Amino acid sequence: MDIVGYLASILIGVSLGLIGGGGSILTVPVLVYLFSVNPVMATAYSLFIVGLTSAVGSVNYFQRGLVNVKTAIIFGIPSIIAVYLTRHFIIPAIPSEVFTIGDFVVTKSILLMVLFAALMIAASYSMIKKDTKGQEEEGGEQKFNYPLILIEGAVVGMLTGLVGAGGGFLIIPALVVLSKLPMKEAVGTSLAIIAAKSLLGFTGDLGKTEIDWTFLVIVSAFAIAGIFVGSALSKKVDGKKLKPAFGWFVLVMGIYIILKETVFK
Image (cartoon, rainbow, N blue to C red; front, side, top):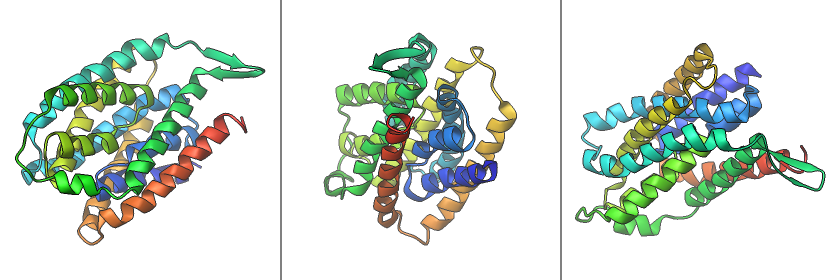
């Protein structure tokens, strides 16, 4: 199962390199179901893996001038603060047993996995639907809707802190619509934001639990290898055509996780 897990780790990076997002939505299920990592720990590990992989992926975008630093700062600051506070205060405050429904006990782990699955289903919708609005909006004169950008940055940061997903599927449309960034620049800027908020958010877990650094570095290395593969494939394959297919896969995975954590627990 570990071999399957490492192969799946490569797919995390391939997705990020090929379609600019979606990879982080695979990380927690890979850690939980293939490596048998506790869900709470998996959300912390995911922040490190996604953050490091996105940081490496963003280097190429920086070199090509496709990272809007001003936008990254405006969106990133509230997001970084929110993810750190969530990991440092909110996650530890959630009780081991949250509530009961009849004989079924909703534990902290089940709650986080169901919340993550709900996020996967939401992500799948944004991948499957045709983004005609985003295409019409992109490329105009850049303007900043500061209140909405700050609010969305904080919301995405909180979700990232709770479930360990980078939130690229939320960030990219926001950058295109709210900041008028071209799509490629939105992808590069999103990777930079994800890298900063995920890695800094991960520091909220340091000192609270024992980290298996060897395992974390190995999985991250496979994901980073995947992002180079994805970037190479993106020059030959249109990521926009693959995005809906990946969206359907994420939708099925989201439904599977909900059923596994509730009906078939």
